[in-house]
Length: 339
Image: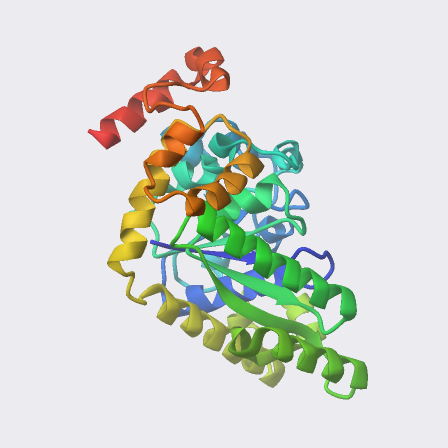
């Protein structure tokens, strides 16, 4: 199972539109696909036809990512009524906003990773629609992801936001999850006749080079019509829909090719070390852990980092100890997995 986050640190750039377009491409390709709706606005859930009252949502999963809760928060998309295939959605909820804190703990940001491990055999691809911020929910999505696709409009504030996102992804990759990479930047809502759009598109290419995808998504009503009808763009009639669907096919193909890139021994070794660090420091603030990465680079041996922090592997953060009663089932599962 591979995980792709679709993100932007600026709202209104069509991030959810891109996420649904990629979901449509995966659905048409026959991939077993799960869309995780982490945006409290819940637009991805609506676009997938998941409308109504549900007992469990992604908010419940982030509170307690136990097996039964995760499965109850996932429902089938109505897209399956239009075309045969396997696409589900982990339901969004406005209550997810409670987890969008600017200072999440390390344990907080691993919750979705833990939840997805419960269903990793059920899906080929997971697409996460994230909020337009760099707070807890987006970081939680990135920690669970293999790749992040950054969506940008060809406008000054979106360009700045794309640069911030790239820096934040790299910081998180170096400090916590070496498998994480930026898939690239996709330009959305592009108007070919606009000189400003052409200027900003060129600016993005100058800043990110080959990391800017060569395809550009133009602003068209067709995509909004398909979303309004809770239909995948690949099943919408007309040449315009077929052209848009083709672009999403290309983006998905780039993502799938990126997933199979070889991971070197050094990266695998780093994964083990960061997993060890995560178990030790799960109650610590994420920003503190990111600062530790800079300290670790100055030390000759990775093990020295624990001495520098005055933290032992047998120690348990106060926050975790205080909540031991609530998290006992989860902790038991973790120990079983480690064994």
